[in-house]
Image (cartoon, rainbow over all chains, first blue to last red; front, side, top):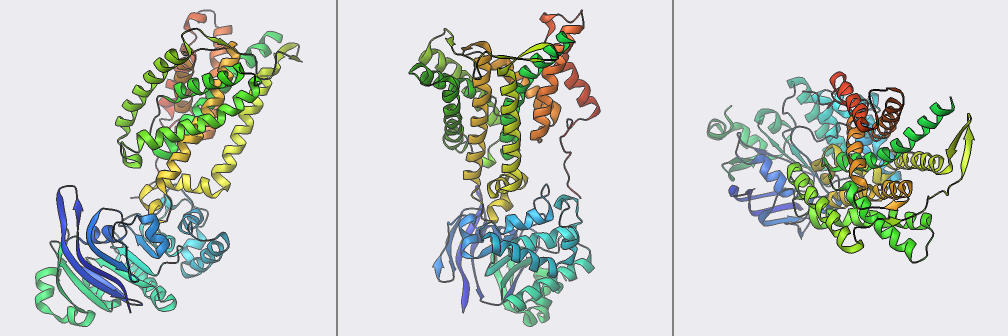
Length: 235
Length: 296
C-alpha cells in the first residue's frame, strides 16, 4: 500500500527554487532513503513534506492531499519530522522533551510511550532529568528521534541523522531506526549523505541531484550501480 | 528602627510594582524573544479602562480585577493584529522594538484623547488602614500588594512548570521549529503569552494608580524603566529573577536615598542602576539568568 505519494513537488526559499518537480513514493512499512550531495535539496524535500516551507505540486499521505498543510496539522495526521542537527529543546529536560513530543496524545498515552522509549534508548532514561542541551550529539539525536516517535507517527521523516556523529554512534542510531521500523511498522523516509550506511538499512532509495530525482531502485541496485555511485554519491 | 522598617516597606512597595511589570516583560521575552517597550503603556491604558468601570460604580478592587481580563485581551489582540503581521515568531526583534515604541506613543496620546490630560482620582485597592510592625505603621495596601505579588509568582510558577500550556510556552521559547513539528500551535501559544503579560501588566497599572491615588497617562514610564532594570538585574529569562530584581532595586533605591546623605531624592534613580551595572560586570547574564546551554 502506498503511504506517501509525491508528484511534481516544487519548493524553495523566497526567489530561489530548490526542488524542480520531484516525484517519489513510499509504501507503508518501508525504509526509503533519499541520497544526494550537499545542496541537492534533501533538507528542502523534508521541510516541504512536513509543511515547514510553502510548496507546490501534490503530496498525498494515506490517500489524502496534504500539500499546504501546517506542521501542527500534519503531525496529527501521522507525519513526524526530525529536523537536521538539533531537533530537541535544549532548555527543557529529557523528560519534558518527550512530554512535548506527546503533545498531540493523551496524558496516559504520553506516560506509557515515554516509558517505552526509555527502554529502547536507555541512555535517555539515565538522563531524564538532565537538560537536553547538556547532552552529547548522539544522545541529542536519539532524543530527537524519541521526541518524534512520541507523536505515534505512521511516517517518520529523518534529516541526516548521522550528521556530526562518530561512526560508531551513527551505526547505533541506524540500528534503533531499523528496530522501530520492524517492531512498530513505522514507515521511515530518511535523507542522508552517508550512502553506504543508509543503503544498508533501506529497502529502496532515490538519488537527488539539483532538485530532482536522477536515479532510483532497490538498496541493492543502488549500492551496486557504479555509475550512480561515482556520479552522485562520491563513494 | 521604626524609620528603618518604614523605609524597608516603602522600598518593597515600589519594588513590588517594578517586579510585577518586569514579570510581564520577561514572560513576553521568554516566550517570543521580543522586548515589548509598550508593556507599561498597555498597563496604563487598561488602568484607565478600569477607572471607567470604577466611575460607573464598580468598587476599585473589582475594576482592577476586571482590568486583568482586559489586559489579557489587549495583549493577545496586539500580538494577533500587529506582531503576527511582522512575521510572528519569526519577526525581527528590532522591528518589534520599533513597532512597540510606536505603540507606546500611540497609547500615550490615545489616552490623552480618550480620557483627557487630567489625572483621574482612584482609592487604594486595600483601603487606607495601617498595621503596626516593629513600631512602624505599615499600610495595609503595601501588605496587600506584597501578597498579590506572592500569589502571581506562585500561580505563574505552577502554570509554567505544571501545566500543558506552560510546557508548550517553554517549548516554543526553546525551539519554535520543533515545537510546531510536535503539534504545538505556535501562534496561539505566543498570543496567550502576550495576553498573560498584558494581564500581569494591568496589575502593575492598578497598583501604581492606587499608590498615587490617581490614574495618570504618564504614570508607567518611570515604572517601565525600573522594570527593565529589574529584568536585567534578575536575568531576562528568569521570572523569579525579575521579581527579586524588582524588590532589590526598590529596596536599594529607598535605603540609599534614605541613609546616604549625598544621594538625595534628586538622585533617586542612581543607586538602582548602579547596582545593575555592578551585577552585570560580575554576571553578564544577570543574577538568575542562564547562559545559553548548547553543546557543540
